[in-house]
Image 1 (cartoon, rainbow, N blue to C red):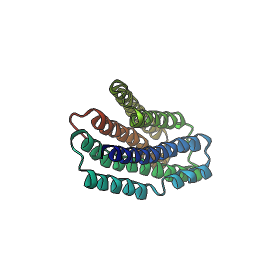
Image 2: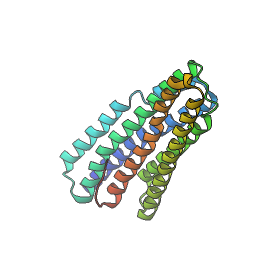
Image 3: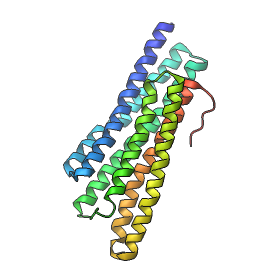
Image 4: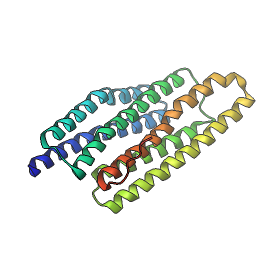
Length: 222
């Protein structure tokens, strides 16, 4: 039974890792697309996350079947429960990539000038991706000390993202004081880029779930 159960768990872990990698890649492509202002490349972001809900349901079904078949307890059950919650976080991060790609490409089509805020958007996206990379690296790590280190790194990058977003807001407000005609454009950009800030927030929730899965303790998700 233990062998069969471990095979099932490995299969679930592979499914989760694959879908997580897809979401991470979507954010990297979105960053590259914005950097080069390539509207067509944003389409590949949408294609990458197109089947995300379906894949997440498949993973959840596999987890439910595994629980029903093997009746895992303690550590094993904890891992599976964490994975069910994890798929929801991954889907949300994928949704952020999709919304960001759709909206930012629309802003580019509408000839919104990004010169004043370009650097902030790039930094915001880079730190959000760093947070996500550190969190997802925990999936394939078994050493507790390494897992804790990745968790701390995720928190640091999320904190950086928050700080950059605050500076970004301040810069936009400053620019609006100089040209109120840009009000709608800047508010739209701010709303779009909030998805990047939330990506970093969700990366922290992913990290919390994975440290719970692999180490135990109290699970706190907000």
